[in-house]
Image (tube, rainbow, N blue to C red; front, side, top):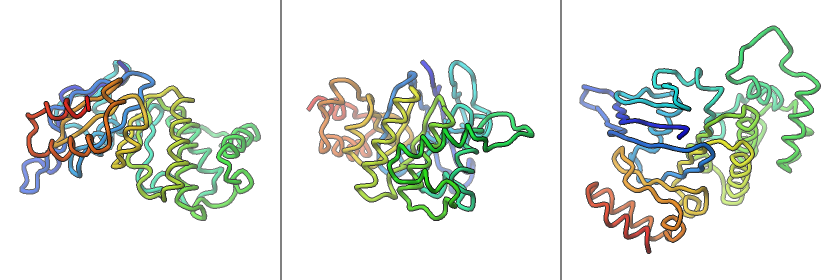
Length: 268
């Protein structure tokens, strides 16, 4: 076990009229190198789960452990050397006013002690150029261009390279394909798989795309009302159809206790 959430509750605006219970007694264990996709309706708790792992939201109850270490109270910047997050908005993961190479340099320094030394050395630039060239977008010739000049697909591709340079133990993908057109989405998804394989990290991908959820990774979680209501892997995941998954998700919202329908759908 590499990443564990133990009886996690996450409540927003606790005690107020607009209180929202985002996660309910959630227990989850993920092994090193697992690639997990997560689906569910809006408000199911998918992004809240990502936030609890990232450290941008502190659980109201329960614990988050990484390699056996309790990180529940650590803020996101204290987890940055181990946990990388790619957001749904391509603009969120980069600094638009900085150059491509400046953004990459920041990624390489993430979670490390800062000192009085040059962030951009010849050796670092060579690594950056090689990494960016692998995208096939010609960005290796534009390393000094501001990131703000790049398209959404280029920025999200760059964000994936930044995640790889940071070498995290956990890679969180929060609807990171949502803002991309179908062609660019397919390219970034393949890059995502490649980065996860290269790092050997635990990857968690939230998506509304059922095809991507079924075709990607080794494990599929279905969430509803802050809980994981189905956990599919192996033969069950391989045999699941898009329609079966949609039926399971929509049916789950009516009755959390009726898990037999989900199990049956996983076997169809």
